Picture 1: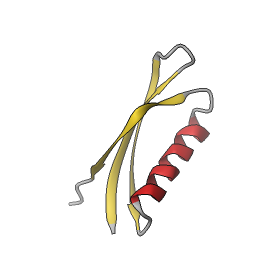
Picture 2: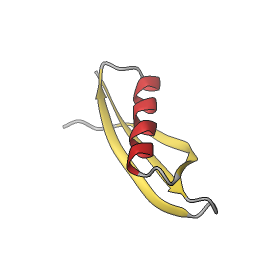
Picture 3: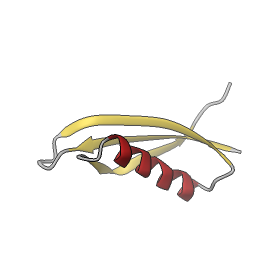
Picture 4: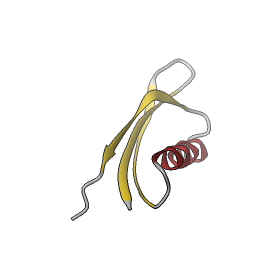
Amino acid sequence: MVTLLFKAQLVDGQGIVSAEVARILFGVDSVDQKEALFRELCQQKYPHLRIAEPILITPAKSD
């Protein structure tokens, strides 16, 4: 089971960073599926903002 940390900056229509989102996602889903879920979560929480590419994806440490 892969555990990944996703981070993104969200910008408004003028390109100004208005929010930062970080989420740890784990499970049997592929990296692409997890990224799609992360993008969906960002859109649901901040529908008026867009993700400033690229999204940072790193392995999350599990203790």
